Structures are given as structure tokens and as C-alpha cells.
Image (cartoon, rainbow, N blue to C red):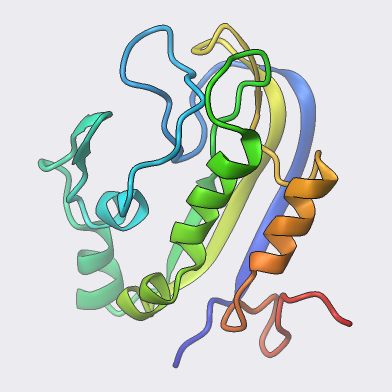
Length: 170
């Protein structure tokens, strides 16, 4: 079985920025930024061009994983993913939203379906998003409860390097 070689959590705190980030759910109507749980299978559907859901129909997009990971046997990286959580907006709780997303990323079925997936980079920003007209906490490290749950969720098959598991050492 091939292991993911890196799980990187890039730290960038505060600041303002325009532009969208992450693969989480931005909401279905403007202004964006509802605190909602991601749809089931959204990660796999987006990676394969099969997403049809609240955010629209991505059916015209190519099967990125199928073309590059399977047909060309290339390693696939997810350079930026996270779950939107707007602290000043009601809705689902931060941990529930983020955990629902990383459970899709870390599930055994993701590992089996996408063996060429070699890197996932969590978008670790807490910043003002113009699309939301407010602050979005994309992080998994700001809150000790979220950080601990994220760390505990790292599966055995994730690797931080050639042979080292990303699970915490006892």
C-alpha cells in the first residue's frame, strides 16, 4: 500500500487577503460563509470531476485524479484545502465542520481510491475574507480542542516523511 508522504499544515496567521481559499463549502448564495457541514463524498467528487451539489455542477471539469494520478501515474498533491468556519456567524460548530472535512481526507476509502495522492496541505490561515465580509478561521491549530482532534485523526497510513508516521508519539 502506498502512503501519503506528507501532511503539511502551513501556518499563516491574521492579515487580510482577497481571493478564495480551501475546498470547504463557501455556501450556496452570496454573501458566502455559512457555517455548514461539508457534503458527503465532496472531496472525492471534486477530485474526480463528479461534484454536483450545493455549490453547483462541476460535471464539466475533468477527472483530475483519473488523468494525472491513474493514467499518467503521477503523484497527486492537494496544495490547499481546509474547512470554512466564520466565528461570528451562527450554524454548525467549528469542530464538527472541520472534523467532517478531514474525515473525508483521512478516510481509508480515500487512501484506497487515490493511491497516487501523495500530499495534502491544510490551509492554515485565520484571516479576513472579502467573500464572507468577515473573519474566517481555516486553521486546525488555533483551538486546542480542534488541534488535538485533528492530530488524533491522522491515520497510520499518513507519513510525514519517507517512513515516519504523522501520528503523535506516546
